[in-house]
Length: 337
Image (cartoon, rainbow, N blue to C red; front, side, top):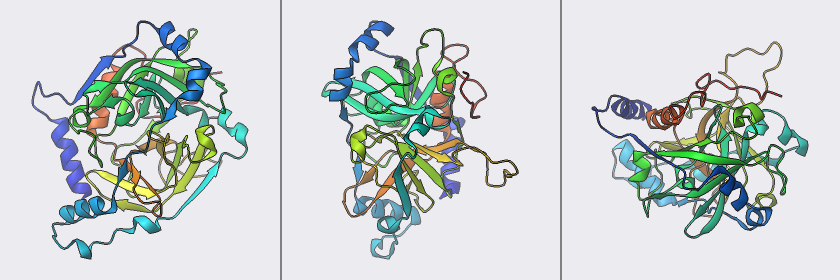
């Protein structure tokens, strides 16, 4: 399966001239100030956590059977109901103000149905990563509006301020998806405006990333799910038992629901100890994000697309919007105090 995924990524990377792999747009708003004025504390309190898209066990079994080239779905082992994980709020809570937790926040946005909130992560100097379904409505074929990112959000507090969106981009695959999940293209990238002469990366630092590294792996998953602390606190899950692969996605044990969409899957989260080797790979690299969950209350998992060439295409498009948007491609950076 991984060979198949790598081949798919190569096809995107060597697409013929003129083929569109990423489409973006300037964020709809009259000015930076208008977005900051729009997101009053009252509107943020009333914003609804975007429901986590659900994928049925039957659909996942069908996809896995197709990948394995069999019509006997009854012979397919799908261990999504027994995936092992741990789940907790941050302890101590003030850890949210320390790197690398500072890189994760709530992403507010406006749609035709009202105001909603997802989760997102800073992955370069002015760039954040979230789910494609938190950026672009693939049913109505339009970008959402009035994006505002609040890193380190905690019960109505904004320790690093509110950062407005400037440019949004999603893969062409997500635009054409009609929001059918699982989707290997459920990525969204936003470029944020500077605030008071500083970039978001200078204020919070940023996480690195790795492509084609989600499976196999052990991950730290972060987000703001409404089913834990009402979405008002950052929640964390650690999981090392993946079920793979479903249309270029994989699932890990998790109990986060609405509002967690876009939250990062992170390899080797934290800080390397003195004397600790790099044998298990680099620290603080995003390898996926929360894209979908189960339809059953019994099963507990979060599904993620595998970062691939389609992700790199939208990341590079965001980087190219202005000098200084991106630095040290894929390598984490601590905040500048």
